[in-house]
Image 1: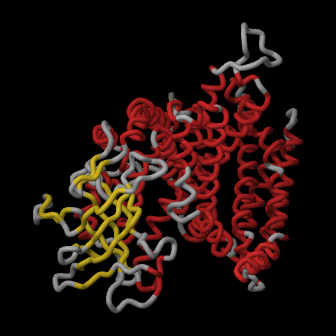
Image 2: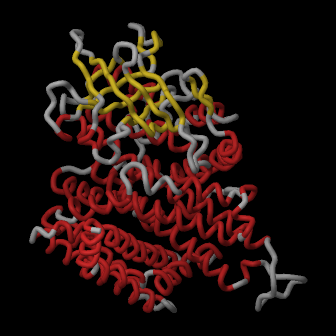
Image 3: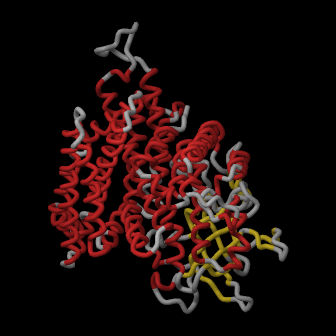
Length: 594
């Protein structure tokens, strides 16, 4: 049922995320429109034909653990090998290790399609991509020479091991320990939970990146080191040797993403798992954040991918399902439910929110690419832009994934609540994305406490002014509805500007609890206001380009619908940020005393 929206993805890359600027930074002519289109078309074909048919099978089958070995769902291994052989795993990796060196924007575009086809399938390679980036930035030349090529080609996969039973989001509470060995290696001991693809049968080896403490490490997060711990140790010739002292103790039975093995991993039950330091001792958190920042954008893309899949499924059902009478219906019998205004509102809401999620993710990827390719002041500016957008691109698209999937169930009615339509699976799958890789509440705190103060607040102020310029340009067009659309988006940017100023002042005055109390509504306000500007930018490019087909007309209508029906939420969010903190904190205090 899933069809990759290659045309809309290409449009967003070019006209909203401004891919031409990124392409020029990466070498200009080498990234031609024809090449990009070929990449998207082939990724779309593979997602729709090879991965998507396996998704319902994996949901029913799940993963099986026997004697410490995990078996993935039927067809999973063959699909992964075909995917890796297609070169998709190394799309952005350095050619030095067999990668293609392409921009993050194209990686995000293809990962949207993998996640629409099956979120449970896509999350495994996502972590490998993050490990590649972390090892590229922090690992020694010897470690890179030993592991990078096989990770880049997808012959091996990687994991990220942070969470422990007593330490979820608070990494300062980690207890896993590392002991120095005379040969320069380390012995790792401890237990990690919620480890995605911690054990599986897709590859011969699995490279675990594990956070642990040395005996003389400082307390808190300053005393965390990062270690590379392979499932199998290697012989001198690089072939697989003996099994390392790392085992999978259990696999979680989850609400969704059943095809993805979520493992409890145990290190050192038989004398210590052998590992190698990544980066410097007690500096592991900085190394892991390189991986986590990559993963946070990737999780945002998961929300986007599920939203697109849910939208497509809901549209198909609404056009097929017939109930009641509807004005404008001239056919025989009952009308398709897509003709009814309430269903139409839900479908347009799904489409608009999906467009916002896509724009946010692709814009964030563009900033990351420009930061990679720039130098000096430009590098600082683009790095700050990527830092500003990353928590928003993780949090709002994952919230949107849940909201859109829930609307998809609603459109299916009772059939959405049973499993055979697939609508329920999408909602179950989507629900984890606002939780892992840093909950969305943590993303909001990161945005307010760390990202707004960048360059003394000038980065966020400059971003808002860029959005205003887009909206002013759209409003100046002599096109029906554009002036009203621009006025409403401009009003939302006023809300964003006012809330931003209030938060910056609160931080300056040391009112940190008040700022954090408004962080979650602020992040949503930030995402909706900027998303409205990006949809307007797409509508502007559509009319300027003389695009008149049905898809192009719908794109303009979606931007106008968002401005007329959804963006007014920003006024309430502004009030919540600026006026709701005192009530929230007082209520919390009363609760604690009761």
